[in-house]
Amino acid sequence: MSQFNGAGEQPAIFVEGLTKSFGEVHALRGIDLSVPRGTVLGVLGPNGAGKTTAVRILTTLLLPDGGRAVVEGHDVVREAAAVRRSIALAGQSAAIQLELTGRENLEIIGRLYHLSRPETRSRAAGLLEQFGLADAANRTAKTYSGGMQRRLDLAASLVGRPRVLFLDEPTTGLDPRARLGMWDIIRSLVAGGTTLLLTTQYLDEADELADEIVVIDHGLVIAAGTSEELKNRVGGDVIEFTVPDRGRVADAVAAIKPIGEGEPHADPETGVVGVGVGSRGSDALIEVVRALDAASIESHGLALRRPSLDDAFLTLTGHAAEDEQPNGRRRGSRRRRRSDDTQADDTQSARAGS
Amino acid sequence: MTAITGSAWAPGLGYRIRWGVSDTLTLTKRSLLVWYRVPAFIFFSVVQPVIFVLLFRFVFGGAIPVTVPGGYVNFLMPGIIAQTAAFATFGTAIVLAQELKKGVIDRLKSMPIARSAVLTGRLVADTARMVVTIVIIVGVGYAVGFRFLNGAGPAVAMVVLATVFGVAIACVSAFTGLAIGDEESVQSFGLIWLFPLTFVSSAFVPIATMPGWLQAFANHQPVTYVVNAMRAMALGGPQLEPTLWPNLWRSLIWLAGIFIVFLPLAVRAYKRAA
Image (cartoon, rainbow over all chains, first blue to last red; front, top):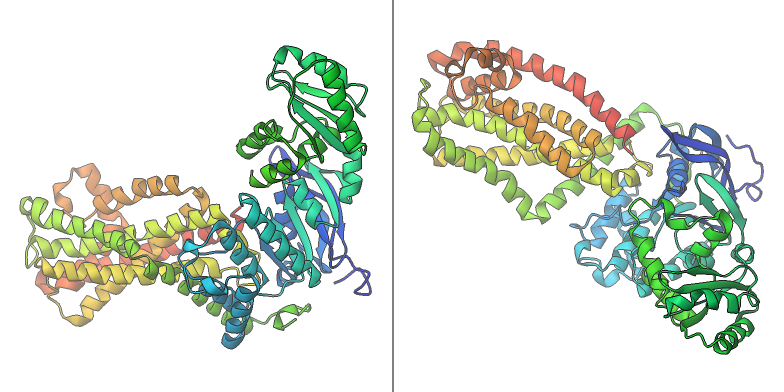
């Protein structure tokens, strides 16, 4: 049953050469992953990259075409029932029945996990308390805020005390405060020893929560490492500003070219100019201000910011992440918003809100 | 870690049946609680058949000559009740399509529950809903002049037959809901096949009034057999009594056929649902 000996050695999730196609679409083209027990793996990638397909295979919802995947020592194909007993899947509030109260939602899940009635009651009460939902326990979930629904959904996934938890975009669509609340809860789960695989479209989320990050695009793992390692591959911090006089965008690019670590990139339509500056952050910021001033170029919203997922994609894949977004909505709005950012901190919150 | 951790996992048949039933009942309760919480659901599942009762009883009924004892209202009610049972399965198809789209079915399938329970729980809950709706419509029928003329036993048998018919149709609806997977398409598709099936039958008018080519269809389709059997059960009498068995056994063969074809199809669509 298990090809690893000694509980300490065995990774919680082990994936090797996993492939899956839907007709002509090659959703996964051979991915490898290994997640040690009690750690968090962040899986980054745009919609359509293959993240969801990978999660669906690991949670036994989909059969792979090739390769193998082992969760808690059980093969997801041959021992699917055993895998289901060690895992839980949570994410976008799918387990929540809005017409039922928070307590009823959890108690029904408890009964499905075959807990006895008293166990079910105490487990539900404990989770409601832990997730800050005790006061709302007897209200229907319809009356909950988006953040509360997401917390209830996460609580529902923990009823069966899973050892491995799959979180599929747990904060997509949440406002910044609710998002921070989810992060705190997720951190406390990890502190409790749960292994976590988290998919997200936000680099900062992976940055906050993940021990290791893999970037998936077009069905392949295109980069893996800690968040620091990935950021270094992006080329460190980015300085960005808008030139209101579109005619002078080219001059601005020429002026800052010597400062950047790589070629500056400019969008002639929006007037947004950006350049990677490595780890020289604030020094480079001052140099850019001086260079623009010396060339008498007016600029708005000059900001130093951490690289985003968009930057990571530009660097790692040579194309922007939004290319294959079928509904293009979220990513488009994020990108437009970028030119409004005035400070690095604002960039964070604007991103969180998008 | 509690009872959930067992790694050597080879459950016996008894264990699987026991928990299969338990999981089904848990999910049934879940569905029925939703129904109970949202009175609008009950209202809308009853409104449409009530409108049909009133429309056919008072608007069209006078123009439809029938020979059954008690007149057109007694002819009509078994037909309306069968149609109500069939139309109640719109909900089955729509909710399954919604749950599929929202990822509810994925979530339930990723849990260590009996894999059949999502489908069986839905069917049991919808059957309960169907029986309540049928009983309400029988009450409405009584208010507008309908009477069971054949005693309590056959009356109950009529409700049971209507329900079994409804469950067979629910298997077809579950299949369409899971296979199509889109709420609006599922709803339109339901109208496309359920309207002709229930109207081109003996449910509302005597088949003899239809053109010959349509009679050929109407005379041999399951709704007609079911409605004829239900009518004989409800009204009895020397005219209808002899029609009971021929219609009943044909109904049962049809219903068995529908179960045999569509239950596995629904299960397969559920397993494949993505």
